[in-house]
Length: 334
Figure (spheres, rainbow, N blue to C red):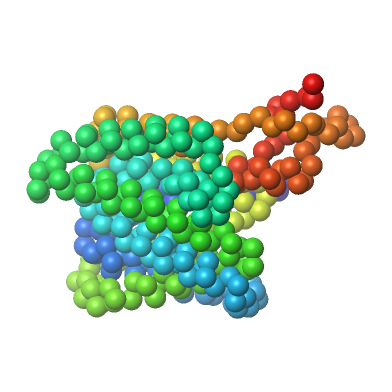
């Protein structure tokens, strides 16, 4: 098997594991509170990642990486998981996945503001389309019956939006840290930071574990070992061998897989209007990540292959990794 095939396989594993997390959260949320579920998942993942870190021999992260590690750990591993767990108590797994998909747009927005990476008209247009999608999802879910009428599902949608913001902010914090430490160090110690942030829920976790059916406890263990520890590991493996723009596009498959898994495992399917709103969210992400033509001339290499200079490629890289590829994107000079 070629290196490219192994990378494609690793990316596929990541997408499936991350999609399954939404279903497992919805299931485990039937017994565990949002904070207790987040802490239980992170404790399992921290143990597994700690073993992997020791085996890797990477050592302690340098001092310069700690602000980014702490920020990404608290926001991504901590608050993101708590708000997503809470949101999935109010809406089904498919709806949650469709709303959280706006994360890449928020990453680009925060990267342009905090990391001074600039803004494009595509980003603005994509945000407008995704905002329309969220509005459609909210209108759809407001008609869902439940305790408190339609307010509970709308609260769930709002919490999923907050989760997407926490995810995006966590990635923006993580990016500078990766310039000083390895991916294993940043992921492992970020998970440690998120675990520490969730420790106030330790009492709830202990209490709820005592009365939890085995299936719910196994869901927590699954979330820690597979979507968190293994999913991030296969993602890093594939990212090291694949253009980051292509890797970012693979996450678009997650909502569709979640809808199918949720239907097969939980018997839950989002309303048609919710699916339409989710499609708009995905369309907004696609618009915001669209590539634009560059005015830089092409360089012709031996064998007719065309490639941009490294400095130009780096200048076009964005926070979620839209690396411009040469084929068909750059026009000939006049």
